[in-house]
Amino acid sequence: MRRPIVITIGWRAKLQPIVAKRDGALDALILKAHARDDRIALVTLYTQAADLARDVDRECFFLTYAHIYALELGHPSRESLHARLSALGRE
Amino acid sequence: MAKDYIQTDIASVQQSVERANGLANVHYIDPAVFAEESEAVLKATWAGLAVGADVPNPGDAKPIQFLGMPLLLMRDKYGDLRVFENICRHRGMQLVHEAKTIEGAIRCPYHSWCYSTKGELVSTPHVGGAGHNTHPSIVKEDLGLNEVRSHVWRDVVFINISGAAPEFTEVHSNLIARWSEFDSPLNHGGADSCFELELAANYKLAVENYCESYHLPWVHPGLNSYSRLEDHYNIVEYGKFSGQGTLVYRQFKAEDGAPAFPDFPGLSEKWNEGAEYITVYPNVLLGVQRDHAFAIVLEPKAHDKMVEHIHLYYASDDTEAKNRAMNTQQWKEVFEEDIFVVEGMQSGRHAPTFDGGRFSPVMDEATHCYHDWVAGKIAAHRG
Image (cartoon, rainbow over all chains, first blue to last red; front, side, top):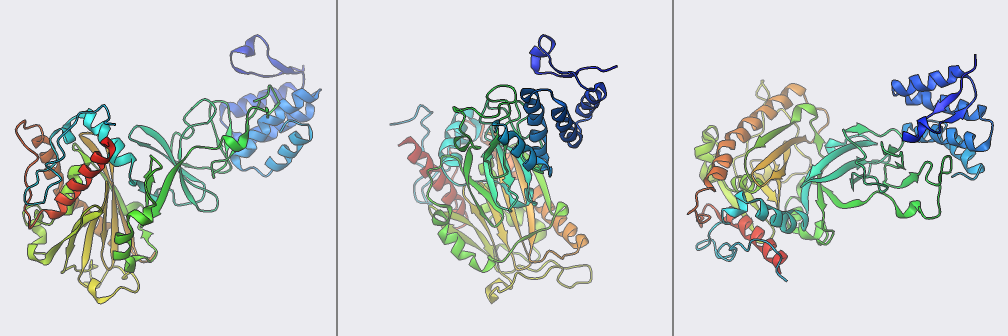
């Protein structure tokens, strides 16, 4: 059964979750990566979430997370993620 | 215009050493006067904050509280050292909470604004709405971390909070020239070559004690066997710095009796048995000797509380850990012997009729020089 990816933004989360109806397994992986503060995994997982997004706003939302964690880590993908956001007019 | 502080008597301090009194008690026991001094003495001049060895590697970051201000000691990816206010330019959140190495960027834990190790604002996620990471009103070039003016000399990181002091190299040109023979690279001995001492005393009392050799035979009797009182000389540059020198320094010896550490290169004969111990006003105590040097940064925690951060340096990065540890222990014993004196003077400052005391014109001129300098900074601040 497919479950939505739910990414929460503060107190609004319960009222207006930003939902991407994609792979529930990915949702769970993201939550687990957050729980263990695994930022390397978060770069990958949020990039995957962006790849699966059904519209550009959701794509950029997830890309932003991937980019920020990549930036913090000095991750090799930080430049490509930045370029992708820039191409979409979000950086 | 005079500031709204207690107007302590500093005129009696700014007399000749034969007639002067020391600073009044309130300069040691009154938080309001400490607040004035913090502005006049610690923020308006070049105060010691830390040492470069605190952040030895590119990307190393260390949060430091200085006079209640959250600061960040940061070595960027190219090795350059800077001091920033440790807050995000967005909502003022403290950025770095513990010493660590920044792998990529400094990410604010609140809304994840990111800064480079040079302090540039590099990303503002969702600032224009979800997934929109720019906004015309948020100009990254204008919102880098606030940098605190800094200068590194002999690995000590000096900061000028006010931003208005003359250049460090101008203020301390005489001292820099005096010790120019020691300009060779300093190698911090590492974890076995640094320690901290917490003292229940005003930081100025540690300076006052460090400046003079008068107390050596009484407080450090172990030095009497070779470093007698008459083997020392005063170093006094009014308005600049003061300290003491010795004519009978002996190299630190290893167990086999041979010198344990190599000399700093290029020293003249003067330093074969010479060594000097000088305070870089207001709060850094330095020592130079042929085979090692040290720096003590006095961290003023409150009017009656300080931490001494002690660091030992060598001419080579290839010295034996055992010898370094022995040397550190030897110095630790000496500096610990001074604690009861410094804390005792702090207690003594609660005696209501004490007038700041008098100075021996022969033995205490270096200490008077420091009092005179502090008084001068306060006078300038009061205007």
